[in-house]
Image 1 (cartoon, rainbow, N blue to C red):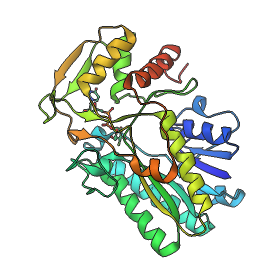
Image 2 (cartoon, rainbow, N blue to C red):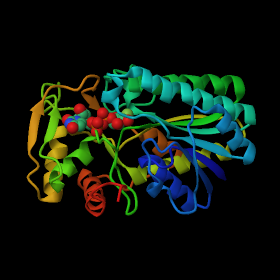
Image 3 (cartoon, helix red, strand yellow):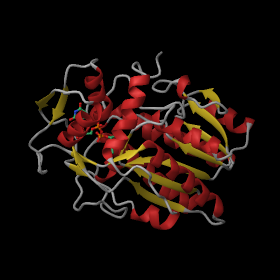
Length: 329
Ligand code: UFG
């Protein structure tokens, strides 16, 4: 298939693009490089630099080539930031996704794989979280993605759009070539590894008074390779169906680790002390997010390879040591 990958120069999009190429698909990456890096773009993918909000540019792109599917990764991802400037998230994540979907419908492209998020669930009523559980985001980031899921559902019903919405829990880890390098970095594991590498003095623990066993937030960390493989299964499932599909899946490991446990695991993996400082809560953070991924295992035969947190951190640590400045040299 010929696949348009928006945000394909970013952390998750680039790993998916590489797997698509390995599986024999043809890949065009559309990325404005505001967060992504040309160094993450896999050999064999064509890079078009552009913004998802630019309707004319998208029209040109869809006129120049026929895509069988679109995978949409380009978005802001920092839940904490979304509680300071929600408008940026509604513009970039919700409004720009609508522009992309409108152009797709206009040009007759009807398969869409969407990067959704565990942040849709807010503070869940039960753990592990299943797909049908209530959607009540506690941050504007989650709401900006929920709006897109709602659009997808209506476009499916009204226009026959075939889509898969993949709700990522906490993406982590690295492949030999690609890893996590945000500027500025806000995510827990890469920040902890900066401390291990000596480029940061300490890791800040955001909140120690949550209703969890050790008072810190619990998350479900999923290796980037496993996350990526789910996208290829979703694409195949959409392609196999004659009718319009609406597939919604949670993607996690099904095991939760607290912030303190992640720091402890990183101490074991790296052999460094990693000083931690206790701080106030970060606004908008749910206490516990752990996925049930039974549905995608059952329906699409997804089999994650990395069950252990230490193996996930180990892969991130190896990449961080080889790339101390991320993709910037
Ligand atoms: N945390 C700290 N100190 C830090 C950074 C993070 O204690 O310096 C804590 C956070 O408060 C949170 C946990 O570590 O409890 C994980 O935080 P991240 O910022 O790494 O990730 P989030 O859980 O906030 O969000 C990530 C992605 C979202 C995605 C979500 C799904 O950024 O895109 O996982 O669970 F939606």
